[in-house]
Amino acid sequence: MSPSGSKPQGYELEVCKGGAEKLNQFDVIFSECNRQETYEGCPMVEDMDAFLSEFSFVRVETKWVTDYHSWGDAVWIKKEKLIKFTVVPRVFWLRGKKELACGV
Image (cartoon, helix red, strand yellow):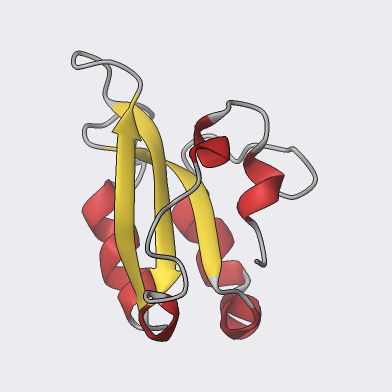
């Protein structure tokens, strides 16, 4: 989601909405996500799920930083690509290497 290496810090859903016309060009989306309000008004992972499902994405993996942190990383894959991507490569979880997951 951020091939430039920039992080929207709590605005991940707004970034997706702003680029909605381009989402069909992606098979995989990798983004930070929240399960509690980390930033005031930030979207929860379920909000990302709901929006991305409108573009046929399904969340296939979520890795929280720790059990007590409210944020982590998630991977969404286009439903029609699920057979092709049955195993999410662990490289997705190497912090700082998020761009590898974009536009696969």
